[in-house]
Structures are given as C-alpha cells and as structure tokens.
Length: 440
Ligand SMILES: *Cc1c(COP(=O)(O)O)cnc(C)c1O
Image (cartoon, rainbow, N blue to C red; front, side):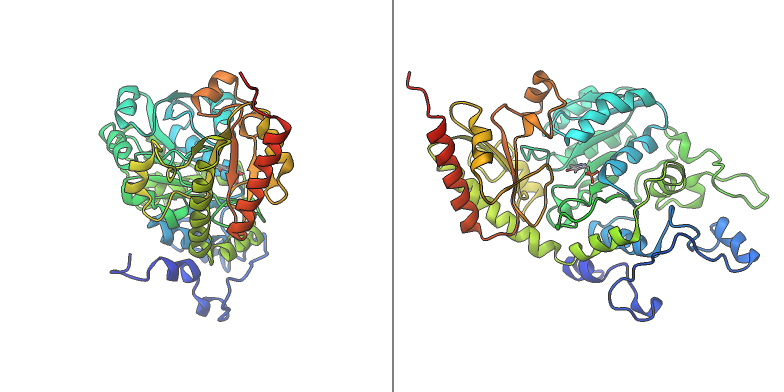
C-alpha cells in the first residue's frame, strides 16, 4: 500500500464509495430497499448472465453493504468480499463453502467459543470432521493434515489468551497440501494485521467487534485473496456447472469460469447467502462503515492502554499470571514481533493467586468494566471465560484451550487509562480482602 495508491488511513474513510455515483452524497447512503428495478428484459438478461454487474435483491447484494465490502477488501488487500449478518455466518458459510458436505477442517483449541461449539456440535452433522494442532507450531499442522483435509482454520490472535498464529508458516503447510489457509482476523483487525500479506487465502471477520468498535451491531465479512487455485481438483464445487449460474446456450459454467479473482466469495453470495440467507442489512452495514472511519485511532489507543494495563497487572502482588503478547515472558512475544508490529490488540486475560472465586469477586467489585461477552467495544469489558464464553467446553477442553477456572478476560476500550487502572486496582484489593490467601 502507498506506492500504488492511497494508504490505509485514507482507504478507511474513502474506499468503496464514489460520491459522484450517489448524488454526490459525502457519506455512504443507506439503500433501504429490498429489491431493485431490472430496467428492461434485455438488462435483466445481462444481469442474470453476469454480463453486467448490478443489484437485483438485497439478500444477495445491496449498495450500502457493497461499500462496506469494498472498503474492508481495500484495507485487507483482498480481491473479493461478502458482507453477512454476523461473524458466525462468516465462519459457518466459509467452512461450508470450502468443505461442501464432507472432509476435515484442521484447526486449534484456542478459538472463539461459538466456533468451538459449532465445530463440536454442528459441523459433524454436515459431514465435516475437525482435527486440532498448535497454531504457533506449523510442523504440528503438517503432521496432522489428512488426505481429505479441506482447509486450515486459525484465529490470528486467539481467544481469550491472545496467542499469535504463525501465519506464514501455516500458509506454507496449507499450500504444500493444495488447501487454503483461512484466518479469523477479528481480534487483530486489518489495522494490526493483514493476513493476506502473510499468505492467507480467506479472511473472516466478526465486524461486531473491533471493526465497528461501538458495540452497536452484529455483522460479519468474508474476504479472499484471489490467489488460491480453486480449480486444483480438490474443490469440484468451484469448477462443476452450478445451477445458480445462468449460461447463454453454451456449456453451463462453474464459479471459476465466472471469475478467477473472487470465486470463493461469489459462491458464498450465490449459494449460502442466497439460500441460507444471513443477509446483512444496509443500516447495519452503515454502522460498521461509520465505525471503520476511526479504526486506526481507536485500535492504537486500545493497544497503548492494554500494554499499560498488562504492565500494571504484572507488577501487582496478587496477580499470578497475565496472558498477552506484550507481557514479559509471553510465549507469543516472538510471533507478535513478527506479525503485529503495531501491537497485539486490546484483549488480554489474567488470573489472581489463591481461590479461583476471586475472579467473580473482581468482576463484582469493578465499577467501570462492563460485564459482558463482547470484545472490541469503545467501553472496557470484563468476563469470566470459563463460566460464560467458553462454558460449553468441558474442563479438559478448557484446559487445552488455555482457559482456567480463575481466568478473567478483559477487552480494553477507550476510557481514560488512569480510570481503568484505578478501577482494576480497587477491584483486586476488594477481592483479595474478601477472599484472603489461606496461610499454610
Ligand atoms: C465474536 C466472534 C465471532 C462471532 O461473531 P458474531 O458477530 O458474534 O456472530 C467469531 N470469531 C471471533 C474471533 C469472535 O470474537
């Protein structure tokens, strides 16, 4: 970026919107319409044959949603994007698209709780099995790839301990086996990390979190690099004739015949979005666009405040451990230095010494941190992961995911850092007074 066009901070307020195409409206208009005029039958034919690009029906495409898709694609250096009603729709449609009714996904234990649940309870019923390896160790992935593995799926910064994945190493493993690397980049946002630059083929977002940053709406996106060869023989769903694609009297076309640049997101749009229907509304897309305008400024401040809070916690005598790549001695420090030069994001976890019930006491005593399951909000948030976001996991699975009974996860917002440190200090003091360490 930069050499060939506008830089990141220019793209985040301008990409995907040309005012001259929208009555010179400076802000992206909200196209609150279910459907679009086809014009005349000849134009309808052109639209349905992909000879002319245009809008038909807002379930599969809407100009406000398209502005969001193009803006995030520009920020991530992606060739194609599709906006969806939630991050879970983005994760699910992506994995349904890549597996198409069978095969295996190779992933890690450290994932968003909803994704872990879906891997356990939903995907097996769609014929998709799940294997696990260690995201920081590409060799463990190479050893776990099987003949019917269809994709490697990781979070660039994992939940809740902020472990960093070795994306370039994982991309090498995936590509050596002819499969794509899919990265959930929700915690990092493109401000901190652009996975496509490190070899990722598909990037998914919950835009509910840091991308929008206001905690105002539920939204998701899927992006693709345009570099993966979906015609390599292992993914017939992209080459075989698709009944959703019209032909003009010739042989029926597959998705790679329509576009080599973005067949993955086009197939999600015309298959999963069209028939499973988790469409993003234009109002919600607009809220995400508004939030994106301040992405860099927000995330930079959240990173700085997070690093200050990590240092405060590491220096606190009641704190047993702190998990964030900026923490002294973090196992993710080297990978963070390589992939996250602007910082490792605003989510961290920590535990106090002594009774695990002190975690609940800290949450009860905090006056400033909101107790809720979201992350990436303008407000700072706190949660006891083992009982809430990851409560569906049994104790052994929680241990594998690095979640302990005493884990307290924080998502740092935009408040004054002194207020946040002061609130944690008083909440920890109260928990320590209520549940003193037992003297041996
Ligand atoms: C929240 C989240 C999701 C799910 O997104 P929703 O918008 O809540 O559906 C997926 N992945 C990660 C990493 C998340 O934090």
